[in-house]
Image 1 (cartoon, chains in turn yellow, orange, purple, cyan):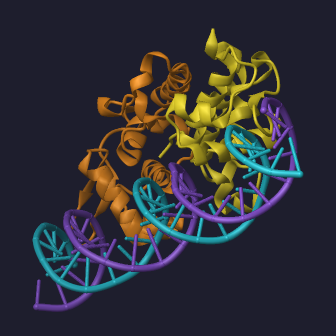
Image 2 (cartoon, protein in one colour; image 1 turned 180 degrees about the horizontal axis):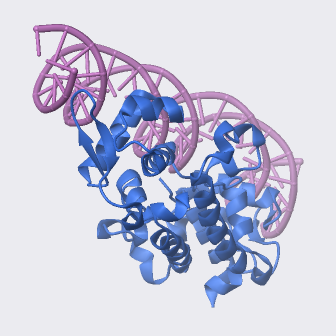
Length: 134
Length: 134
DNA sequence: TAAAAGCCGACGATATTTGTCGGCTTTAGT
DNA sequence: ACTAAAGCCGACAAATATCGTCGGCTTTTA
């Protein structure tokens, strides 16, 4: 249906929150409350962002999350890749060749998907978290 | 997950088929066989395209489907709109204002979604069925 | 009047998305 | 050392969307 999952929307909002926050570190509870996002769900999202090195976490009392890099260094494409998986519009142009269809040569639609894909990618690659918050 | 549904993929392939076919009219059965798409599913897709005036149908023996307009007059955006519904990346920028979130003013993410949306739209609006087949 | 074709609504299977829950580990403050 | 606050992790469950099937109907041509 060509839509951005709420997972990505939530994730991005959390990152924006961290980026503009005056605090050096923000707990999951705080972010979820301020952004109105389910605590448990956001936990999974941030945990994933943590594993892929976009945010860092500190455990224990006074713990929380903070950005791993300067917002300038975080491209939107990175974020979405982590949260949405390898975002290819259609499998037949994706990385996994087993989905590349047999009628590849004849398939005139393929070029279209590729074009749209490119246009999305270039937008995503050209914008950073820092661009969003200024 | 930011993907094009197979419904749209099938629909587009069917339209391309009609556009490049030497026959003036092609039955559902023929298209589904040649394109390797489920007969019953494709029926629903073409029926929808028919209702919205992109293709026309003739009933009875020797019946089938044919394009309602010249491929030059059919923009890809039209096709996808019919098949995917109102394709907005996120509800909060969609037509239905009840989904526009409360934190609209604060929401820095919104501009991003809009930017991506615009880039997709302009690609989709600038390409016609005719462009695909030449 | 029979066969081929499209029309239509209901249904069901599957996949994906969106959460929820419970118990674990780590850490700061007392 | 103990406790409470916080993150970590895997299993599960609910909701939704996608994909496809089915049966019976109408229309049309030979």
